[in-house]
Image (spheres, rainbow over the protein chains, first blue to last red):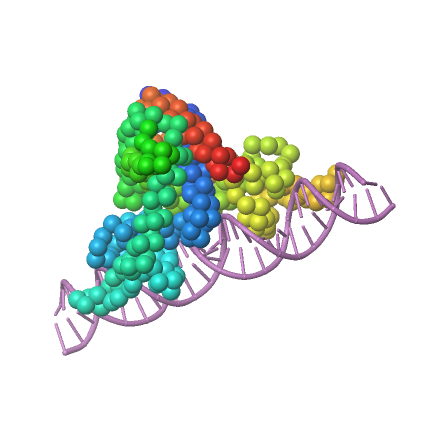
Length: 164
Length: 164
DNA sequence: CGAATATGTTTTAAGCCTAAAATGATATTT
DNA sequence: AAATATCATTTTAGGCTTAAAACATATTCG
């Protein structure tokens, strides 16, 4: 333990360069892949990534979700979802209705054509992802999954600590 | 090899679920950490992440960079940089001048106060990142670095293939 | 030289995104 | 029952982001 002249613990500037480099690499990877997926969605289907992501959430459930649920699952703000949903309702992909039991709540679900279009996009999307990760061996994939799970846990812990 | 009735190779729908799950986990991790960094930058220094990132690029060089250089390094569009720089010039963090040798080119650099402010933010930022990744062992960090490098290579190859 | 082409930046139009305030509805307390 | 609190959503104001078109300057080549 390092003590200063008044016998209190002091912080030495430690080296966290490796963690910083790791973070930058993580960010670079994600940005690269995300940009690639955006381009392809736009080119092939003229759809944006946020819209695709929203439809992906709704495709997982048969009977729709509330806006708050979507907002939590997508990790974006409520106001953001409002706008996104509005555009997807206009384009005919989503159906929006007020809950019967609680008139504060809006329930949204994929329309028939919305679901069909999404499934087509999702199938192709999956092949893009496979191609993007194709240099990784199955073992690499498993190992990355494990390390990213650990990273996620660590980050959540850190975020929680801050919000006490 | 699977052949169809006319003796041409056909595609079977393969399972790429693991790659897809990996991509979603990668995205979740990055979104989580990025959100956390955004909040802290905003709270502590009232600065946005894009501005911080731009200043980080400029801090690495003593004599400034052109807008195109910044745009390439940050992996964002030219127009985006124009607006970002404009705001940072107004706030006094950046100095912008037309190149002497090529009047198309704008050279930007950190002002004295801009650099000082950035250094203060960067030092604290590094400790946040260290905390966010603190559950990872040095070995985990090394291993993640390696696997992400491989991922980046794979993604770049895939992107390049598409842009032939 | 001068026209064609290339390069660097800005503008434009549209969409995404957030935090914070506002709105409207339900639940709880007094 | 009225006041208060909580909850779900929308609105607002501002910033970020992109692709494409427009603009300005440099370079190349006939």
